[in-house]
Each structure stands twice: as structure tokens, then as C-alpha cells.
Image (cartoon, rainbow over all chains, first blue to last red):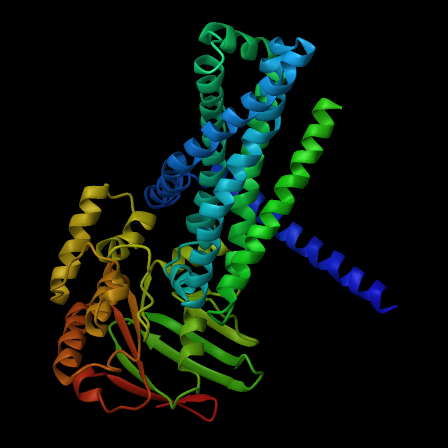
Length: 261
Length: 223
């Protein structure tokens, strides 16, 4: 009986979190569409800061991981494919692995680690120090001024970082394929471009945008959940990371299933 | 003089369920300078929350410029709030914004002024307070009085008709108290603006020079 109650409570808690995250996403869209003009000069600055921090400042770490991943995929492919005379499949493997799956997921994981934690802890700290109340008192809607730019900014950043990640990992793969195995750049890129269709690009775009929005909304939600004590900030930050990872992977599985099954 | 604040038959409870106001009434008019005193945890903070619409009364009405804060939607409430300026005891400046950006924020959000003009206006307001620090640092490292100067400049940014100051003189030296209260009195004097101070007692009444002193006692406002 206790187990059933525990499970019931756990499901209910998850459902509550999900509905709140959905509410944040919906409010962000409504704010973007219907209230964009309101306080535009102030909110636009928050949006640009978010894109700068989440997108631009993540470029070095994204570059490193993308290059190394490209090298790993080409190394593994070239260690197996020649046994079956399938060197030509390298492009398809790259598209299957990087464009369809790893690009959006890795970009999201990097953003969760860098910016998701920052969003949750910053908002948590603002909530506890009553800065959010102070904004309300000034007639500034915190969802409009603080949350919407963070959600939209994270969505845009993950989208841009995913494409950057994919392009750099393709180049990273060429470092080995070209210089190590004497495969020409045109053959290498031709093989990748042939394997890449609109569906792959579209799904990669959809995934990255959705993941980014989810990260922004989940991390904002957990940040705002910090109530009274400063010790709640690390707790909520951890929950934000776990919650974002869980939702990103579930959404990844759902989208992959829908489009590629 | 027009009634700016009207509290009617107010009943409101603290977070722990204790009655703070019971059937309380208060009228504050434009052009007045009012000091509201109450011991610690006797309703000063709750009154601020009620005036800003953050807290809704259990019973009764809080009318600001004739609008019931419980009956209007969020958009209207935010418009109403932009006509009020608050200076909190803890100042509550936005920690991730620079000093100047803190003052500019209400202007950037509520007005259509170009960015350069907003920043000029923010600098002008900061100068008026006598702030001597760097306006391009985040406020976390500032001394208490400097934070108070920034908070007062921010509260005056939209030239509100009502300014409410929570325990303004708390923790300040006599000279600082005099400077900051002079600035606020200068803003309000000879105008139709309402200036409300809250404090635990009337020890600083000489500096704040109120027209009325109101006590919160027995869950009511007494004059």
C-alpha cells in the first residue's frame, strides 16, 4: 500500500512539474507573440545577453567536443567499414549519428551544464533575495522580463549551437579522414551531403529548438521554486539539471520514433 | 486634495495566520507626507505588499488612485504600479544589473524613451542623490548608504505620484539620514505627490518632517 501511495505521489509530482513547465513555455510564446512591444528595450537586452552567454560563450567547449567526436566517429568507422568494403558508408554513418542524434543531444547537454545551471541558480538567488518581488512592485512582469527571454534565448542558442556542432564535427572527422587516410575533402563532403536529406536537417532543427526551449523552461521553473533558504538554490539547480536531461532524452526518443520508425 | 490611497474595512493576515489588520481604514491624499509607525512584525511590510498589490486583503478593499487592487487584472495592476515608487528596507536592487541599469530599468520597461536618453536620465537621477561610486558596477559590493541612494533614484525614475519608503533611516548615520530624507522631501514638496514613510517609531520624525503620523495599533490605523 505504501509503495502504491509513494508511486502515486511521485507521478502526481512529476505531472505538476510538467504542467508548470508547459505553462512557462506557453506564457513565453504568448509574451513573444502578443506582448513583444511591451518593455521591448528592456527584455531585448535580457534576450541578447542570454544568447551571448548560452550561445556565443559556449563556442569554445562545443568546438572541442565536436572535433573530438568527429575524430572518434571517423576512426571507429574506418576501423570497421573497410572489412566489408563499405568505406562509402562513412557519410551515412555521420548523418545517422551526428545530424540525427548526437548533434542536438550533445549541444543540449553542454547548454544544460553551462547555462541551465546558471539560469536555475540565478533565478533562485533572485527569488530568495526578493528581487523578483521588487520587479513585480515596479510593474515589471517577471515572466515577461526574466523568463521569456531566457526560454527563447536558450531555444535560439541550442538551435545555432547544434548546427555549429554538426559542422565542426564534420570538419573534425575530415582531419582524420583527409590527413590520415588520404580521402579528399570533396569525396568526404559529397558522401555526407548525399546521405543528408531535408528530413535529417528538419528533424535536427526541430529537436534542437525544442530541447533548447525545454531547457530554458525547466531551469527557469526550478529556479523560481527556491522559496526561503539559500540552501534551496543548489537543490533546485540539481533538480533543474536532472529534469532537463530527463525531458531532453525522452523528447529525443519520441521525435526519433515518430520520424524514423 | 485627491485621495491617492483609500483602505476600506481591511482585514488581512500574516503568513502564520495571525490577524494583522482587522476592519482597518485609512485615507492618504496627494500632497501629504505621512509617517506610519508600528513595532517589528506589526504590519508595516504587509501594508507595503497590500499597497503594491502583491498581497490581496482577506476582506475589504485597497484602492490606489480609485482602483481596487484586488479587482483589476495583472496588466492594469502593472500600469498602476508604474505610478508608485518603493524604497525597501533591504533596497532589493537587481543584482545582475549595473547600478545605472538598475535605475534605467523602470524607464526602459515602461517608457518609450530612446536608450541614450534613458541612460542620461538615470545618470542625472543618480547625481541628484550625491552617489559618488562607479555607476557601472553591480550593486552587491556597494555600501548600505550607496545602495539606498540607488534605490531612491530608481524609485524616482518614473516620477511616480506616490513614493513609499520602508524603514528608510534604518542603519544610516545621522548625516546620511538627513541627506536621503531631504532628497525625498524635495521631490515631494510643493507638489501633489504623496510620500509615505514607515518606521518602527517616530524617532526620525524630525528629519522626515511628516504632515501626519499614523500608528498601526490593535490591528488598526490610529492617528
